[in-house]
Image (cartoon, rainbow, N blue to C red; front, side):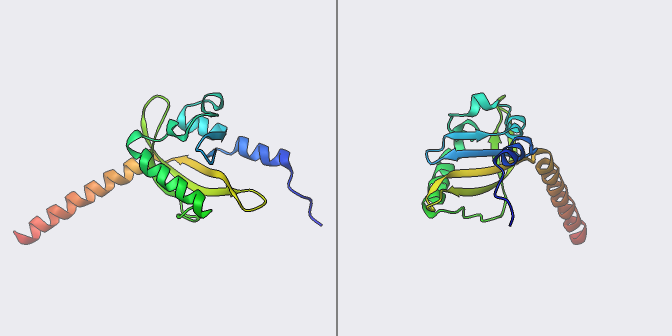
Amino acid sequence: MAAGPDPALSQRIITQVPDGVIFADREGVIRLWNGGAEAIFGHKAEEALGQSLDLIIPERFRDAHWKGFDAALARGTSKYGREALVSRSIRKDGASIYVELAFAVLKDDRGQAQGAVATVRDVTARYNQERTMRQRLAELEKQAKGQATA
């Protein structure tokens, strides 16, 4: 018979994984913030714990975020399933970044939503490269159309 989960191993994984791992309770208060989240957002755990998720959500996106957050908790699941979502976020220094997020609603033993957990990866460089490539492709297509009609 396999041994049960090792809490010490689980804690080491969360602490040492390079991606950000964030857990916010039902009110959106940050209760877990690992070293990956520190590296991505620039806030030490001591600064982030006990704060609202608004800490990393650009002001113009907050209304949409909270509507989605509350709806996911009410449903007991994220509408994105296992799919990651690219979104805008903000660092401690005020810099705007793009992050890839995978969400899950964390439930207790009775199946009640306790909050939301997210794994986070900074994809700013990749996003900017892809945007530049899309713009260049659009320019080339426009040039090709111009040559085809000439």
